[in-house]
Image (cartoon, rainbow, N blue to C red; front, top):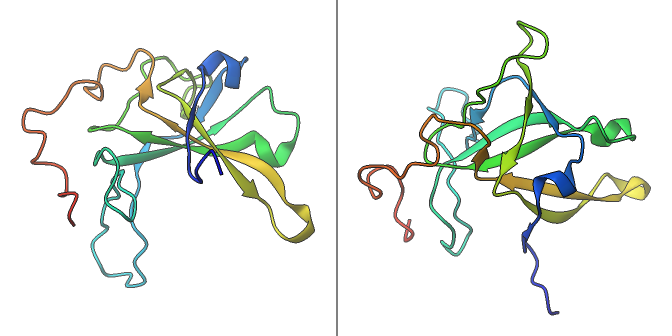
Length: 154
């Protein structure tokens, strides 16, 4: 097989989402599943099972694509790989709703089979490095790059 499973294709934002994306709510930290409800949440990092990846924290946001004509595919999650939480800078579309138009930077798409049983279809997992106009520090490297990341051996 020439292309390995899990390969992420770089794609320009305007090609993937010609009418843009609407952020629904806030961008939050991704946490590992823990069956113990009393356990402290443990953040996820961009590392695979072999310890390969950037080691940066993962963030997630629910977005909707106004260009999508199929309702079940209109809303989905985007994963951000950034040292700090990306923060959109533009105004809310409807005040108090958290809905904002955003444009993603460093966008990649990974093909994925979605759905169940006979209702499977090809979908994508989208990852980004930030949001256009964000000045929260997501694009600025930390003062001590090793302090906020787990070691790759972990």
